[in-house]
Amino acid sequence: MKTTGMTILLLAVCLAGENGTAADKVWQTDGASVKVTGAEAVLSARSSVDCARLCLQHSHCISWAFDVDNRKCYLHPTVGPSQHGDIGDLLLFTDTAPMCRESDAPNLAVTTMQRTLTSLEGDVINICSNKSYIHAEHVRCQATGQWETTESGQCEKRLWEEEEVTAEQFYTLPMTPAVGWSACVTATPHNDTGFDKNGFHFNLLDNAQSDVILIVLVWMYPSDGVNNTKAKEVMFLDAKKNDSWLSDNRTLVAEPDNPYNFTGKKLGTRIDKHFPFKLGEQFHMRILSTGVYEWSVFVDGSFYANHTVADPVTDIVYFNPVNDLHIAKLDLWCLQ
Figure 1 (tube, rainbow, N blue to C red):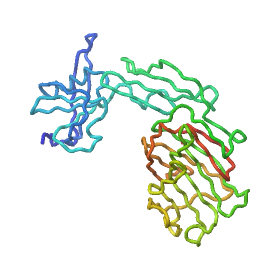
Figure 2 (figure 1 turned 60 degrees about the vertical axis):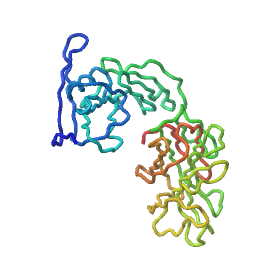
Figure 3 (figure 1 turned 90 degrees about the horizontal axis):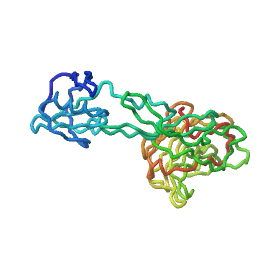
Figure 4 (figure 1 turned 135 degrees about the horizontal axis):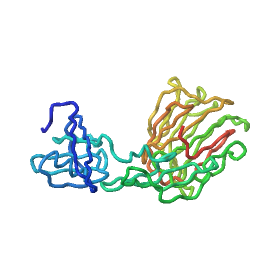
C-alpha cells in the first residue's frame, strides 16, 4: 500500500501559464489510501509531481491520484474516489483552493451544476425584483475565476401569502426542481368541518397529477383507527401509484407511547418522536429534497424525519395542500 505515513501531506506545484507567469498550486491528502473509480481522464505520468502538473493543465481538475506501478495519473473534476468509500492503494490529492466554488455562485439555490476537467457551468435560481417570483440563470466559470451569467429565464411565482393560498388547490412549481429544492408551508390546523378523523396532508405530484411522488400526511384527531385506543396523532411519509398507497415504504412518526402500528398494512419504518402539531397552533414545515430520491422534513426549524421515494425529484410538477388548514404562507423554493 502506497502511503506516506502522514496524516496530512501537502504538495506544491508551480507551472508556467499561457502568459508566461507561474501559477502556484497546493494539493492536500489526508494520507488515506483509496480505490480510484470513475476518473474522467487517465494519462501517463512519470511521478506524482508530473501528475499534479497534468491536473493543473485542466482548469477544473479538483483531485488526482498517481499509480507508481503502472505510471498512470487519474484526474477528477470533483473530489472523486473518496466519495465512494472504497479502500485501495492510491493517495488522493485534492485542490486546496479550486477555482469557482459552487458555493460562491450568485444564487438563491443551486439547481444543477456540472463540472468537467475543462469547464464548470450550471443553472442557479435568483429572486426577481418582486420577491414573490424567481427566475433561472445559466452561469459559467470564466478563466479569471469569476462567474459569468450567460442567459436569464422568465420570472415565475414561488411565494403565495394569506388570501392568495388555500388548501385543495394545485400549485405549479416554478421551474423543474432538483436536489436542494424545498417547499415551505406556514399554517394553522383547524377542525372547522367537525369530523372525528381529521388532519391535513401535502401532496407532491407528477405532471399528470396521477401519481403522488411524496405525501406528508398528519393525523391529529381521535378516531377508531387501528387500535381503538388513544388519539391517533401521527405523521406518515408515503406515496401513491394509481391511487394506491405504497405502504411497504411508509415512514411513520409518532409519540413513543402512541400504540398506532402497521396492523393490516405492509411493514414500513416507525420513528418514535415528539408530535409537534396542535389544533389552533401555527407551525412551519419545510420539505427538502436531499437527494434524487431522498427527502427530509423539518418542523419549526428542527429536523423531523427522512424518507426515500421511488420517483426522482425532477418528476414533481405540482404541490397540493389538502384538508383542514389555514395557510399563511406557501413558498415553493425556500431556504429555511
